[in-house]
Image 1 (cartoon, rainbow, N blue to C red):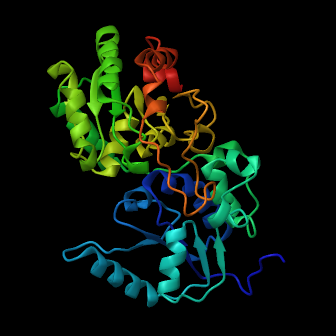
Image 2 (cartoon, rainbow, N blue to C red):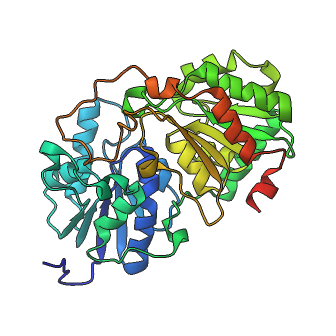
Length: 368
């Protein structure tokens, strides 16, 4: 039976309680919702960690936080966020995450709902079709709204949206000026962290340092080590292996938008499969993505037509073992902590990909 609305919605809730990278992947579907319901009031339910992705996004009219920011136990702030949500009234709910299903149920929201289309009995047995396993995360979010909105055919409409304003860009330029980075420098942002999948997507700091040293020696590159506070130890370990004047430790020192603005002005991005890699695609900065357990088919960076990226991943028989929700049963916990897939990726492979993208060129010649 087709999904039908009794009336044109005047108020829509988009539940986006997702990891940061996944939040970026859902923005193309969010843009389609806005186009279809241009006059509706659209609020997004987010957590403090991923709110920055949708901050300033013109497709949403406001953000609702759970847990709310502030002092006190997290559980108390979570309940405060649910209570605040319960006072809202919506004509349509779009759940882009399993957590959103739970929170909207706790808030006792009553409205027609769209949700991720999961395989039958996935909680017990996981996905069993190659079509589901090969579907990109962006297309999973499009499928969620497909009962109301056809999946777009223009490839550019699949590009994630990450909005920066003039102040955020100016602050990035000011920061680079304080660091003594000239505007014409070969600037490379590196993300050596990423706490998703229990940290099992993190290539070794000494291998990142080998790639950075090559960039410094061959191109006179300036290296920015970016990320959140959780990435500070790995970034510090990498920085300790490099010449002090060529590397700048910025992990934990900038906001999510500030990090995005630095990536935007960079010549190249190099990093693990994590949100900064996908921000690079959204702001059209060429990127080399390092994929350990992640399925590159489901989580590859997506940019506008002509966007250039290189993905490096292992060819081990067990690769990949980290996929989009629904691929594995709810009860399944991957016991592998050998990091074999990451250890199989050599610095030489990543350097070769860097050379293919960079090759002595400037960012303007890379991106046109």
